[in-house]
Length: 248
Image 1: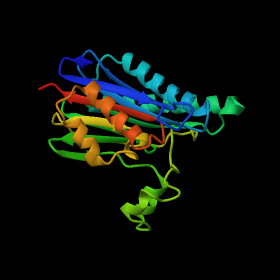
Image 2: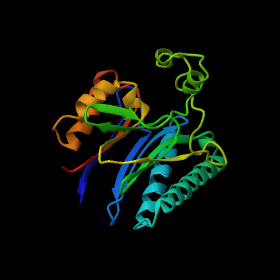
Image 3: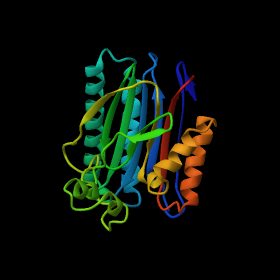
Image 4: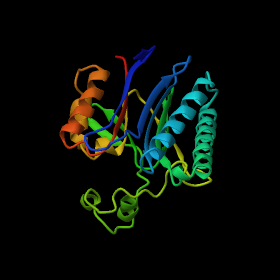
């Protein structure tokens, strides 16, 4: 799809192994041309994970639709903070009220593009990347146990990929009564913005992502190809992708 200054696509896929799809993705634009990209990876097992991810996506969608424009950078931050806390409250309360859903939660990575700023909020281990020319840069920090160990100097980057506890998260939306997150703001100069869940980036290297995203194909075809290649490499998890490109 396109808006006045860019084109976008998003897609989820069950993968090759899982019985249910607990990943969600969304891209929306508002009347003033601001863009919001979101991916979520539900956790907690059958039924629970997809409920948590769906709640998170629905809250972000409804809050964004009810906010026709932003007045300032602080307004964007307030919006993100309020919407995230609301999603956390609903997931947390749903889990408390339903024994089936105890310990359900979801990762959530959100990027809002407003003028020449990117606002990035990340909970869990889904990721946002910027693609500028032939470079790809991860601009989120995984809330994962292995990333924690890496920053302590206990393991190497290479060991992170094969560590037996690499799937353990230190943070997720809905797991705790109070949501724990930061909002980072970085300068935006029109490069491609790509969000994905771990079902994509554990199956494809950054080089493989870059080679697909920098082709001249449509954004829809690029998202299809990313998912197809992740499945070809094993498809061990659900997959969610969201891609934004400025129209040249």
